[in-house]
Image (cartoon, rainbow, N blue to C red; front, top):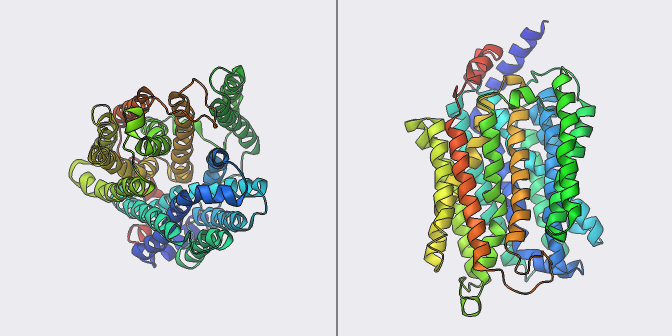
Length: 492
């Protein structure tokens, strides 16, 4: 049997299962992802007491998970193209489930921190799911875009369900039982993948470029470590800058090795293609607001205006209301992307989404005095953010060769994570009231610090809109995908 015949047989087997069934199981996985992202937030203070650590030490959770997420996605994305996207989805879910159980039963802060960091493997789920759908539909952008919207809607509903559940059970369950619930959910997601998602035949050939992996791990590790040091030690210390410069320099030998390698881990030629680099640049810029702005929003809302002259003086319940409204708008935005793209096209729809993010955050500059103003701004930004969360992986896949859908969709998450890490460090400095980022400082940040945060979020979203506007060759991979897939996949 020839390779082309084997590929055709595998594709026809995939076509026998309706796409709606596969998307339904993948939505279950995204619900689990949402639970992981929303469940723990109301419990951070309780977790700190459970582990006998200071509340400020909780910041290490975010830093550790961001580092692991940035490091593992390039390898997992390449493996998806080499061995199959479903297999990588299964592997990452097994690791995430094991880490989630580790979080529940961790006997110490150190073990908890390691387990929490390894939980970051879940960041590859959405890119792999989009790659699976892209392959099953033969690259039909309309169907991929619609399915991605459903996945992101499931993700955001999971965030809300997770936050509401943990808040409701916090007073009735012991900490171990409370922390075990997300592990149960992730384990169920593993079953959903195993029984509900068929494997997609791998089109890429070759082996993993381990030298490239070592070099990109070194470079990304130094950059992420430098950003963490910047938050902890502040901009006055020279060491964070030394580490950041070392990380930037480390990308030079990495780029040389990858460009010379015939089967690189990260194919820079694909990423710098005319239709691909604006998508990846947008993901980086989008990470600034979607990953970096939520903690400043929460602290601003909790600030008492009778003491500082600004803030909402909101209770924890009111802050949850604001965040809930924002998350709901994300889900709505993800679903509306498909409807808008049907009328104006994918590229213009994503430009509109980026502009909504920009408008939402720039509205904070004049309007931030009331709960209504704050919630309105966040809903506007959330509509655009939800559309971009759904649209970026789909756009990356549409502009990629069929052999690199895993790489390109995965890299949107890596670049977004790095953008969020940069923003988190810069925002921590902007909000520092004394010029340091001392976690024990009790003074309130200045209003100018918050205005700086919102201005950066708005301006980066505007730049993202410009990058998206230069994307050309919309859906260029569809023809290539169709030539490599068989007609049976098109009818999935």
